[in-house]
Amino acid sequence: MSVRANVIWYAVPGLLERGAALLLLPIYTRVLSPAEMGTAMVVLALAGLGGLVVAPGIETVYLRWARQRQDAHPGHPSDLGTVAIVHLGLVTLGLGLLVAFAEPLAALLLPGIPAWPFYYLMVGTVVLSSLAAPLRAEWRARHQAGKVACLQLIQTGVLVTAILAALLGARWGAVGIPVGYFAAALALSPLYLAKMAQALRSGWDRRELKRVLPLASVGLPRSMYGYLFFSLARVLLHRFSGPEQVGIYAAGYQIGAVVMMSAISLNKEWQPLVLTFAGGRVPERSTLQRLWTHSLCLFLMFGCVMAVFSQELVRWVVGNQYLASAAIVPWVVLLGVLWVPYSFLVGLSLTLGRARDLAAETLWSAAVFIGANLILIPRFGALGAAWAGVLATAIGCLFLFSRSWNSFRVDRPLIIWASVFGGAMVFGSLMGGAIISQVIGVSLLGLLGYEVSRYWRFLGTLRPI
Image (cartoon, rainbow, N blue to C red; front, side, top):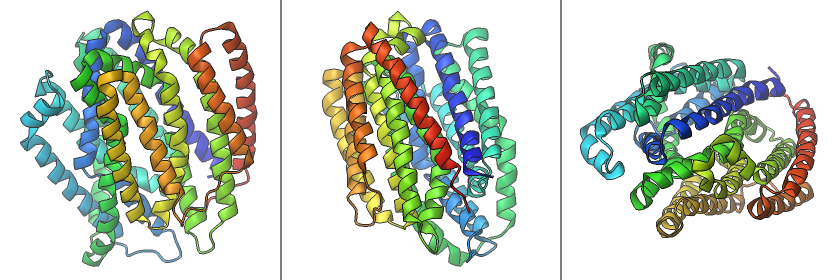
């Protein structure tokens, strides 16, 4: 399948999923109070903790080994079985820890929220979601984006249906949202279990454990990074500022995160492409640089449009009760734009086996993120949480970019679009909602269309292996 076809298959379900989230957001904000919505979002954020304990980063391990079997020097036939055994061992250990320490963990991270059913719904969702790793990794390694997309579309459909039934039909309030996520993970679990059984039947090789375990160990800091930036801010907001601030933060985050979720969707194809162009016998550095430049230019332009229209989007989507979230949206957009270079740098470091640098970056970024949140949240609330995320991600990008193995460079087009994006950030924050901002926003939409066209033509020149 061509790169362009893969990108469509990855992007469309991701955009539909984000669109579904935005369509659900007005229902959340009209059915739930900010405190109730904040409660649900803290519980969903706590699911990130499961990523630290239940098979952290295991999909990256599967992807590496699935890709290896297609290279000129394939691994042993039992490679996948070895990874599956490590995976199930981590799942069993993580599930045992989360259940054994359920009450103290719930009291520490969910103060004022009962462990049943909230905490246990989170644990079940994390465990079931982890089982999807071998199936998703195999399809991604083979560039079978259509299958990944269908899986995601089915899961999104179940998620939306279950949440609507719980909120509007059963009137379960805040618990209806985590119930929907659990139902979506449960619906596809038979498919995941069948693939896991197939992997286990292939057998295992003790010698392969020496190769699997070091890469698996990178998963913990990577998952810790993801947990911090997507989840910990909400937990700390709940503790220091109350569930209302979590609700305000979540509303603004859902809108601004359209940029980040789009980048995450495309990264499903970027990561195998980086592995192909940087990890082959003859690395294709020029192609990799072009992919980096075109992708960053596209998202800088996308960020410009989102930043300028941020206040209008808040009014249209969430209503007057959540207008305070408008100040958060531009910063979440900036965080999403930063996520693009960060994704490329992480993919390159994993391809080149630079696990030590990646672990060091994760620890530094995590320390900055935690410290900034502890300083900024008590004083600035939700806005402080957004600032902390931007600061830590920027530092992480600079750290990885400065490494000697980094082959990416910032050229003139990137400098120009970064300057335009900076101006759009300032303008959207100060003049958002004015007529002139709408005129500028329409002009930026035209430029975004031009960048999308350029990116599409460029993708047509790529040939995945």
